[in-house]
Image 1 (cartoon, one colour):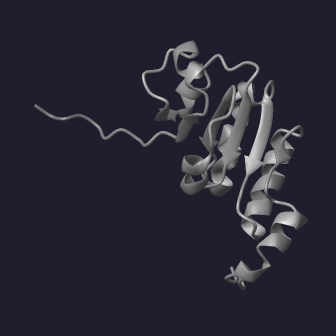
Image 2 (tube, helix red, strand yellow):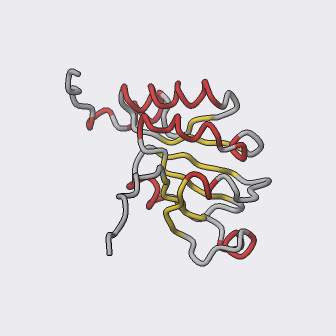
Length: 139
């Protein structure tokens, strides 16, 4: 018996529900999971604050937030989220790294969803962490 063709990898995203009530509202078994984008599109997400974060550390450190859910954008692959219509009809917040790539990702996200706002990526945050500033890697 042949095992058949190898299945192609399909895009997915890590998701974390920041409000325990949303787990039952969305009929999900867990509050932290990885979903194929095609399944993420089917969630009935309304009146949420949706956080898109650049990396896993940000995803795991977000605190509880009423009617909040977080999606790992996976860096420049954030553009794969463009088909998620729920992002157009909910409050959308981006938290990325304070580096060139973080701001490039924010720019790409704003091209897709002009209503997105960023958090912890402003001059005040940069000034308060000036001691940690290091020279970036040339690309």
